[in-house]
Image (cartoon, rainbow over all chains, first blue to last red; front, side, top):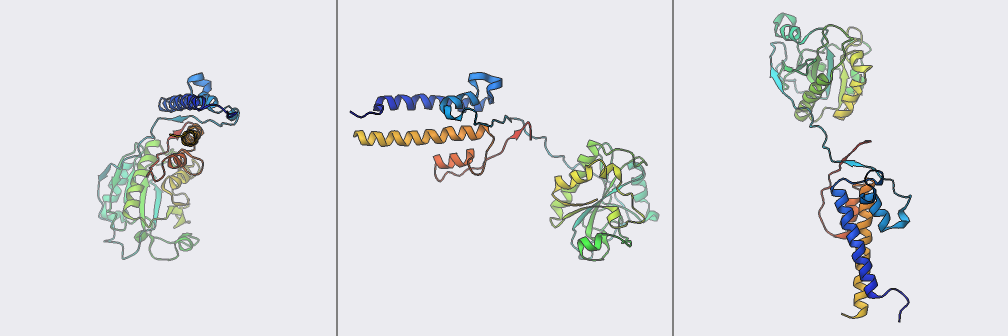
Length: 245
Length: 61
């Protein structure tokens, strides 16, 4: 007779272990992960029972059955502006440029609708997350077309053509004060329209501030409310873009 | 079924249970894809299976 366990003993052990595995699956199904929380009914305790050699060797983490909040939905209101190029003169769109309004969303709507202002952007995002659109993405806005001495644009992008042709531009409401914090709603709105832009132009690689293009006249755009708060870098990370604040 | 055949069947069951236990351990340690993961053990248990793992979130990131 063999020295090892009999077939019956082996089968009994297999049954016992299979029952423990099933119990472990159910513990996982019911999110009973940690022994500290659920004792012997936890997956952790069941695993130690299955394999005593694992005692002290399991680095348990408690997963959550909570889905992440849905990404912010674009909910764009068309406002329009007469101030824009027709098309983009054949240039690829490679960057999103963030601005701060130095004003309110309402004043921005009015200013961009005024032909005399000669300025516009594609989007304006309010502090409450409102998403206004002034220029079609297919057209170049008149937001950041002046390449000033010391700009980083030429180095980053590799050409000195008008950046308005090559960018999607987003103004962000600040109520006239650079100290106005970027709200969660404004951030979500900016993220949402940026994603829209990237769906339209997959070649977008960069997230820039206006000062990257115009470091003299726009040295404070889009400002500490984006830079110092970490929102700018966070936006670039969320979009998977290279950040040039 | 001969005794040898039964022993072989038991050995297969033991290997499968070891893989199942390892998969549960991987789940508890939040290794869902890649080497030594739930997905890897599922594939070892069922060769040729087509999986599309969805990674859960964690309280500590």
